[in-house]
Image 1 (cartoon, rainbow, N blue to C red):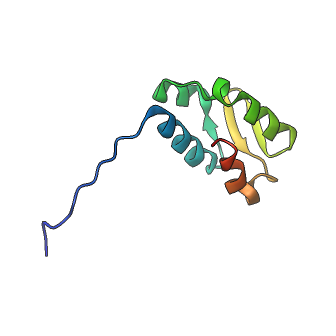
Image 2 (cartoon, rainbow, N blue to C red):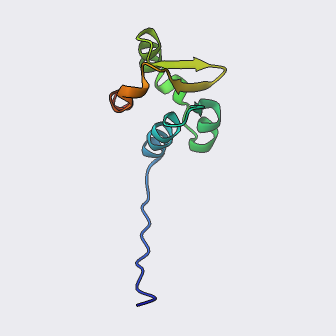
Length: 87
């Protein structure tokens, strides 16, 4: 039948929005622009996750260059473990 769809809307806080955008952006080959993410969420992920990003870089799991964060070939197969580091 038609007209039976149920609309669902969920309010999420800025921190949750930041993390969700970060995870979905890191799934892209190009990664995610953290400066743009800061503008969208009013939170600065580069500062907020500075230690996590530095650690992941040292482990060779992410690239962080010109404000863009992306997974490396080594980080791709274990992306779920990389994402968990932001929680």
